[in-house]
Length: 447
Image (cartoon, rainbow, N blue to C red; front, side, top):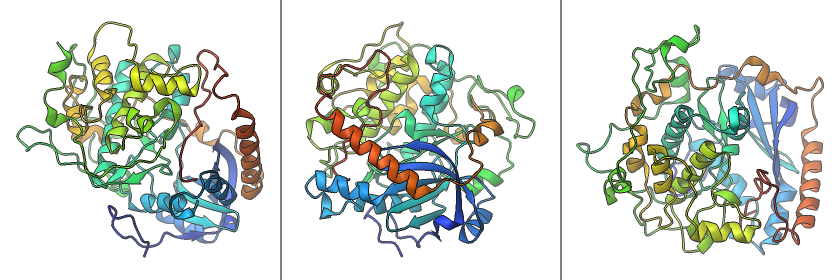
């Protein structure tokens, strides 16, 4: 049995895989400590794992043990003095997840130089890449509503498990083959006691029932069109047809106060808080920057930043340096040009500096922006805004298998050299307008 964090139940060990069991076809993404590969079974244990998961494609998140040790040395001995602590924590979180918008752990690879997690492969790329393909590099309000609703459900489920995600950004929101999202990368997450329950049922929306991944694949129940823009007339013939159609467009809210009805809709101050300085520069919450301790409320701040970026094509607090960005996070109000709308109102309430006054799940779901959304049927939407094609999944595949350990070693060496060169310049170099510089800069004290 795996020794889990206090908030998560004990679970059996995941299947153990060997790199020889997997064929790496392409690189899907790179980070400071790891590389994500598109992999397929090459026989052995991986074939058995794939067979039990309906032959779905897999992604292998390969993490460098050397990178973990290097980061641990930089922070003068993180918790327990062990840079691998975060690796195994992420494994434990993945083991505990049972939700159609969250990844399932298909197996673990462990060598002298690599630790890898095999999870579900998402053919549609990430939300940031998808945004860049939109007209004007921004999403329509209808698409924002759909992706925001699914992020709310994913965060609500994680918080119910006692998991604080702490790194919500478009690059961590992937698009599954079905067009629904998948929230990935839990290496900066932590566990805290779950937030208090919502108000009594007479004032709360119907609870969302988490379903197993198998339920998502096997269900033949007709899905409802819970968003007016995604109707049954646009559904693919191979997908279930919605049984009804309803509009989710909301009239502009009359006031900021009206849309944030009561203090019960906001995150409550919890006794248990984390003091770690973690996150990604443009998305980090003010309480993390201030070092005042944080809890689940940081994820709702992150949602506000993501919604702002989807609407305007940029993040709300980016400055010419990291110091200026953090100053704006702490002190500046987000600039939201345009007429008042429910979406802009919701963003403003999520970007509340005081975490005790920030909206949480219950308040977000009741907000005017989501008026008309049937939360129990969001996961059954048959035609999301974007559905990947088979070509998206096969693009960039190598004719011969990639050497996972060699690619990972080269990526770690390159990131180490780049970090050394940027350290002195980070406070003075100004990013180009509209650039994504700094997106991969995180500030984990763990590794």
